Figure: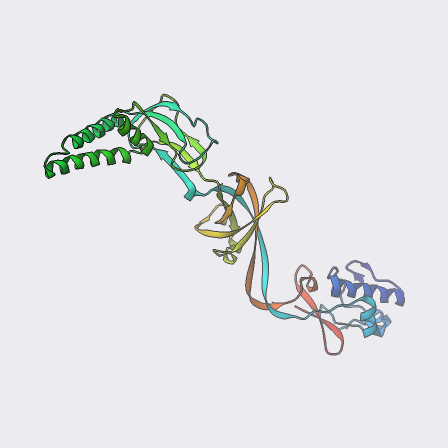
Length: 349
């Protein structure tokens, strides 16, 4: 007897019918076996096969099979039509939640001074716009306050003077007022200085934005220099997902593509977003390109550093398509069985 890929062929004619019928079901319906891809049977064995399920004995490796309509109905053969359709392919990759860099603000001073009192003292604290960060003592600000008060008194003293005198006094007052404004002294503090008529030794420094402190480089009593970054505050109402896409898949990615993100730290939670940017560089070590996905973050549930799985579907150009279950892969070839005009099932690459 000739050897079959999955065991010996049954000896009796009835057993042969059962074996062929099982193979056809597997090939045509589920494509779970390669029983038809065997060596050419001997003449004696071929003659013993029933006419309703005889395999061709031609020289081809993949042989055609004939089934009557009754055999097809009995074993549940189904058919599908090959069509020209665009193929849809799901791509999955990993990503990480990071800050939206457009919503990160550095807090720095425009004057030198000393920290008299620190109100926001730890990373992770939430701040609102207008909250006091610290009290600042700055000789430069004290001097600016005194100049503001002097120019105000001067403008008042020359109110009955000539027009040019009044204009000069007003110019000096305006310059002093704008200078102290441009050093980020709060408007309420300037109004209090003008109302009280005295300079304040310390000036409150307020948060210009709302968010979460992600970096703090300041301690109480510290001397600080103009331009030195004291805090970094991030608005986490919107975050980015930084994802890696393999080079073979990058052609299927485009800006505006819808993405579904799932988070291991939040089981059962998924978020919808869109690809907002594809980085113009390629990572030579991982052979991946980075993509950016923007996500809304109500309740600040998504935290920078979390990992995510992102999925998106790419649609390719129209091509000849068949159902995935109709394809038989042998390891060297991918085949489908096509019903010929005479009712035979013919293997095609």
